[in-house]
Length: 262
Image 1: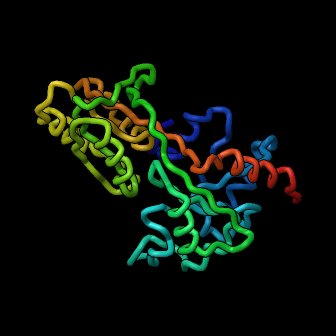
Image 2: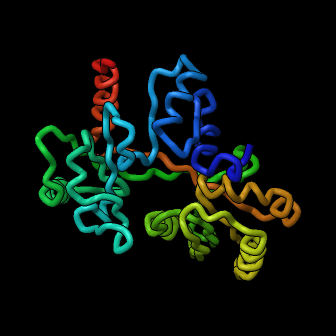
């Protein structure tokens, strides 16, 4: 099984959580009954990127909006990235402000809430990414330490790379970037260019960094990467909550599941 067959994110989910069922379907309304039929032990169905899919009525809606790119300042496609009118946020039970700075003051929180104007029933959480030590994409036991004397060539195909590049810039000597559109499938030419760009780096201590999602697609070029001994490391990430509200968010979800009735 590879990213070309099932998609990069589903493969990433399955690799990280091998005990869960992961399904892909062009129609959520058809896919969910098939999933439950094939796996009757399934008790909870978590949909990714499904807020605008109105054919399925969820029991709980969790909406994400970025700290530096809030939906209140965005526009509908193609002018912006919104798939629905801004007023659609009212369907959300919970709003998570993602990719916040490492530190968020109560004043910043209050200002953001004033901008969003959440409904009385909506709960708002502020989160940030906590990056861990990068590991070799073909063997997670081998890692690399980010240090001030390290030069990094970052290759990624994700939406908005600033958050990651800002983090790496604060940890290493220099960061060069090869950036592609979200979910881009790297071609043989792309990987050959990656090799050439890496060799051009005039540094005695250098490494290639990518995201875990992009690593799923780079694996398709496993023979070439191995043959050319390209040091490609994936940087893992966890979501953390500001204001020590992580346990409260988990409690909200657990309470919803306990109270849920068909």
